[in-house]
Length: 91
Image (cartoon, rainbow, N blue to C red):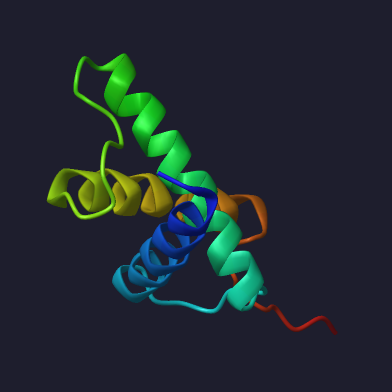
């Protein structure tokens, strides 16, 4: 896949991951795209490590599932590292 396809796939996968895991995140569209792109790459690496085929074609369902699962994993790690998107009041 080309770089534009990776960006589009990452943006959409990141948005789907945010929809599946609703909550407040400190990032906007750029952070969503970065989490999605990195999540797609991480998902592809994990899939290949586990013996499955990785990210092949933009239009394959397997590519989207792997990218979304990788984005969900990275989003969960991001929320854990940033305090889960919760804002706490201090006295």
